[in-house]
Length: 511
Image (cartoon, rainbow, N blue to C red):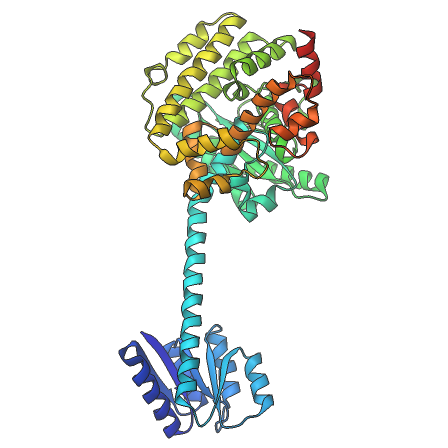
């Protein structure tokens, strides 16, 4: 039902407009009339019309002044001005007031009907656009917690940078341009204190979110990891401000809650190096007692610098995993520490996959994968376990993707078009006929890594093979696997394999 308010001091004009509207719209329209500006203002507030027909010149409050008053209550109300005066000044003021049209008296029925339908169509389009915007906003707010968790998972899993599917959201993109720091809050893994642990974790997380722009992940094994963006510009001042706020929040926590918690905060890092800040937050935790808040800047330098990207084992080919393992061994990293990190990351990976409801492999379901890992007492045993874990996991993922045709199609597209510089989550989603955000969530849920990390791993593994060909330069390899910038390719390669492509090639030739 369209509600139309007619304001005109001439009864014959009001009746004429009502008659035209009734003839044209019938029961689809409801009209009310006002004899002057004051009545018009009162009826507008009470009736809340969809369209206002306003005579320009009336005794007392003029049509223009009446519209100004009504606009204070209904700022978006479309107004059609009607006047017997072809006065440019009136028309100009009407436009300033946002008139959708200007009709001269005596009203020509055909012209008026045309103006009326145009206004109705415009309003219908505006309402549809508004509904679409509201729906998208609602979807965004429903999806945002998942996006935040995906971003945090990416940091935990040593991904190089947030995937473009997350960065499509303007507030996430703008917040992260200046990088940020990672904090990890840890509770006691004691069942008797589980409720108090979770309560303390939730309270601290909520208070940080209330005072700082902050993205946080879910509670995993009595700990929460979060990201605090640090704005571009006066970085040192911003770091000091964030540190002061965190200290203030910690001091004001209930003593009974804080005694079962500790929190480590890493240093500022750029987008592609968030995982480094995460590792630093864990280093802080290993150096402080329960009830304490610590920062990497407070930890002695000798305890820093350890970086074990165990999740990279799970995204590598068998040869890639062996290369990473050899590098860590040469760097003097202990077998016990690597085994511990592998256990931590594999539990995270398996738990997330189990939540999809498709964990059919008893090796995972019954926890045998952990037993085999801890029985491995030598480097070769760890290497064999990684290959076995990947084999089981890939088979489970294939079984899952066979139940999801669009995901299976997406993987085929990536395998076929990985070298295209234009390939993206959005372009693949279009071909698969699914929403990009939905594809992003399902991809991570099933594959264990996000879309961009899967594509990066695929490209880098193929890059390793191409680097073994001496006839190809590093730049040519970069272009062949889909990267435009050799420096960016080199940075990704170094981050994953611990050496630049040129050094990797020398090692291969040395063999």
